[in-house]
Image (cartoon, rainbow, N blue to C red; front, side, top):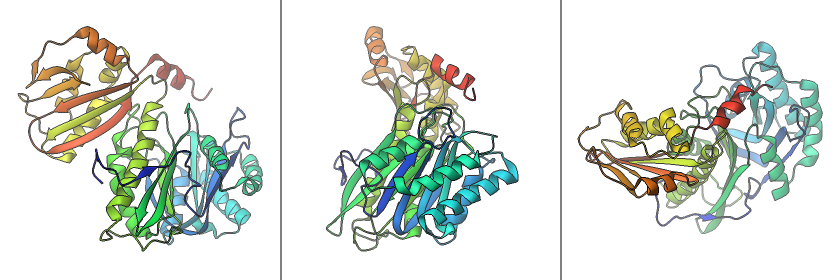
Length: 413
């Protein structure tokens, strides 16, 4: 599961979706939770009880669907479905919110004929407002007829989970396990209230690999640490968001585990799927005009490198400088120095793309015009080398723009 793998074991599947892995259907529709006519209710359903795993927000205030999904996955590590609504977070809604989340679970379970404890629930949107359950009930009644194992149905699901997102986010790869083709696919939403501390978005992964729930849970946590936990948009951690993975086992491989000869290939494919989705969230940050990537090397440990990368990518001053195309490396080194991990103040190198601005903590004359042109691009890569050890990490984020304030100043209205 190494970063920067030059010989990937996965193959990207063009036009792949969460319904590409065998055994899965998806769908979405508009039930009336959003003020617009955009889809706001969706589901993914597996033909059999799928091995399941989940990772959840670290926010102390956790929305009602988090409790329901934890309970469902914890009941036996199996899921038949996940139902998702957008337009309302069902967070900080008290006992009624809990009851509504459980009703969503039981109503959809009944609609598709599966046990309630094998259904997960996710919600996203405005905090502190009760769900319009009459509309949710109506949508759930219609949803089973919309489920299909097609790209169009998967697209409906992707649209149903969006809030302030400008684009849908999906990816699919194939890997070879025991000589058989295994697919891994993912869909996610996320644009604001994104900060590294899983799980600050909604993410859904499907695979037809044969893998146990325990192994899938371990792998999902490991992958999350180097993908979704390495993005930030605005420094805020949501009350709602989660990453859920489901494995149907329909590929027919021998069960994957850490000792399986193709385990590393599967792990690399899962990491790629999650990294693509994480980067798509960062690129689609509210009001963002560019993706920012921070690559740190030479730290005392990977953990130290992660701390530095996340501090730099989360700096409002760095993000503002990138938006303004200002090659202000001083903001970068200031962020490096406040990351809370060991740094030798005499040995830091910084570069913006190929433009070196600092060597051994000393300024280097560089072409300001070339830096301006580079920073005006849609992707900016910041390199930091500490020259202290072997620790490496990469984090992703976006610039901080006027539009971010405009969008969030009127989020409820």
